[in-house]
Length: 109
Image (cartoon, rainbow, N blue to C red; front, side, top):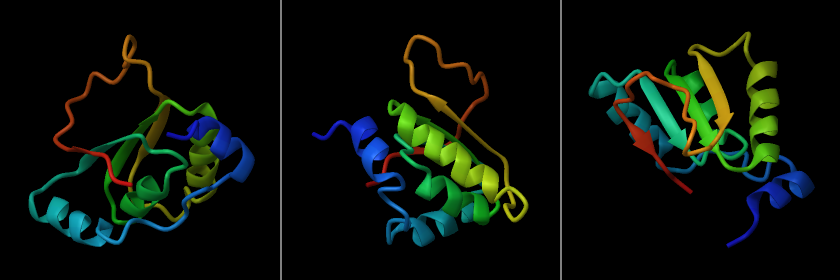
């Protein structure tokens, strides 16, 4: 398995387009009334951006600091056109600071 932090440091936004199933998932989330989504392993944020554009509030966790920095910058530069709220943070199983309940989490490559 690659060291994703190194991959993101060398290649930047390694993944830029959403997975083909994201549209179907977004429709399902909407039908079920899901508003907040936690993306575990969010990388550089391609699915966060997709879901934000659909109006969801998204939270991203990842163990790759370089990927998270790219995600923060990518989402922040798009903040004027985004419909939801976002937050990204480094994954540390000993210190997950979000006390909010999440109704859905996903990992999708």
